[in-house]
Image 1 (cartoon, rainbow, N blue to C red):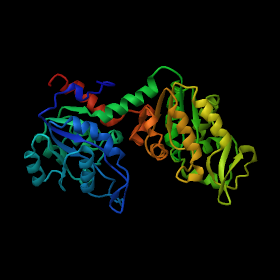
Image 2 (cartoon, rainbow, N blue to C red):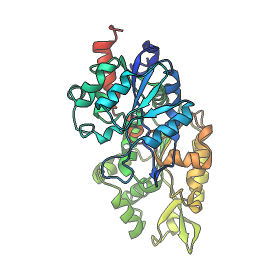
Image 3 (cartoon, rainbow, N blue to C red):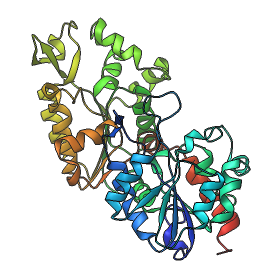
Image 4 (cartoon, rainbow, N blue to C red):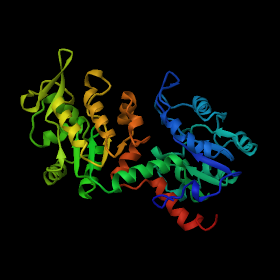
Length: 407
């Protein structure tokens, strides 16, 4: 049991029929899966359930997107990683799919079709309402247990994530357990903590910053990327029209007046860059904030800021980073993100958020040196922001109210 969440340790699953929700949503170009990180993260749970009749539910992208496709190639990747066949069927709860589920033998694994092909999957409903959906009513009779291992989707109240919980004993898998433990440690463990928040999504960084400052979780919050530029501008620094435009394009959901108050209240705890990496005639140039004329786009934090942060981060017991410091995909401006990640890796406990910053950590080969690299983007942000993840809260609720004393 972690954070009041039931895990595989709390239930007998061998020789049972198990429905496992995973998240193998991946970038796909020309029908090729480009990143298998999420696939790899589910292998421990799948292998632990090897003595069950195992059926997998998952999604890929969303309707209207170019990569909204079947899970055929996903089954091939899973088969290679797990070391045994993960059979794919191009239906979800048709009579053919049900027939195959009924014929499953112990040790066999079946991956059903993309659940977002099913129109009711993403409807805004609570767990009870979703439990009456066709998806749940048609599949539920053939299973003894539901396991949610899709941490990166746990902030969503979708049918395949919450609908089975009221009608089947439900626990979380090893990936969810690992994520919750690591992120809880980042927030609740003793010792001094520093949060480094960057990237382009200003609202995401602001949510985390408000939570860790108002609750005295973090001694310091470092801001980089577009979110740093936003707060510099709030503080009266002129960064030029090109950078102002980028900030305006990424500040949806953020209230300037509220942010000004927060900035003034916690100014002594917030660290902002004082020099930048910009592009001049095709090469990187580092310029002090006082010498910056605002004519160039800010692409990275500057060398002096990098040096200062590398020393500062080393003073803390726990370091959490979410969002890159600049345009790390361009090798001329990888330096800030790379050096800060290296500094974070030296903390006693290091956590890398999901999304672009986890991609950056893997790109520079520092991910293996971190205590935890999250598989989640939105769910990780919400957890660090102090928000409840609906799919996990539903499991807690029904475990305590319905399933704990029945199994």
